[in-house]
Amino acid sequence: MPNAFPVKLTADFFDAAGKTKYADIGLSVFDAAPHITHAPFAEHRSEIGPDQLAGARGVIVLTPKVSAQSVSEAQDLLVVGRFGVGYDSVDVAACTAADVAVCITTGAVDRPVAEATVGWMIALTHHFRTKDNLIRQGGWDTRSRFMGRELRDRTLGLIGFGGIAREVIRLLANWGMKTPLVFDPFIDEAAAAKAGVRKVALDELLRSADFVSIHCPLTEQTRGLIGAPQFAQMRSDAYLINTARGGIVDEPALYAALKSHRIAGAALDCFAQEPVLTPPLLAELDNVLFAPHCIAWTDELFRDIGRTACQGMIDVSLGKKPRGVVNPAVFDKPSFQAKWRRLCGPFA
Image (cartoon, rainbow, N blue to C red; front, side):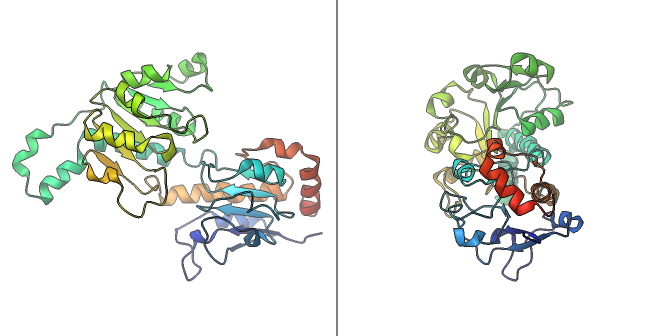
């Protein structure tokens, strides 16, 4: 029987000296669980190797991929905790087959991503980037060419209506905007109405919205969801905001739509291929804002995500099902149950 529950963290949380790069990643949660031990990987890899998981019962993952190969020798691994809510970098089916639960930090990202979304809405419509450059480049006398627009009386269209999108609606409640539009196959019209939004088809949302903001996961159904046909339906004064995943948007089609001013502008926090280490073609344009998949990164975000991820490790170690499980069927597998009892019996 094991006398501890070892948790490993991917090396990208730490600097070369072994100190965390971030103010707080929630590790203090483990103070109340002395049976939990934790340590970083010795090196960063873009994909976790099976050797890195040796001896671990749980692993908390920032950016590396978790593949079938990663969990191919995971006889003693019970849980993968993604540091965030996206899990397209995790082979969930392979984890389930290997009797490994996959968890995300449901709820922990809602406020900061929502704040960033609202901030980008204002930055786009008030031409923050352009007006900053007027001062940097001596363009004071051209300021009258860059009149902005308020959020008042505008329509927000949300693709996906999970926790982040709902928090965006809550933050914008007193801004005088029109009833938000939502495209989400997983909610019904009654639930949408109760939340103060109107459920519509994607085509109607694209035709009507001043802002199209993406808040859905990247799946086979959403990959390439917004491409040339969709940009053709959007209003010429509309903006696209993507804080979800890059593969949802066809980037060459977006480039064409922005360059031709088919749409007014865009703000992108994520890209089809990451990391982006050289300027993309889109960077030629002045009507798009970028962030390197960190627009919502705050000290509070990392603290809250970390606390949620660490609590998930504790829950599993104590024989409890954690929040945010994306493969709940694994808990019904007799092989997982046997593995869980073997590894967590002393603590549960």
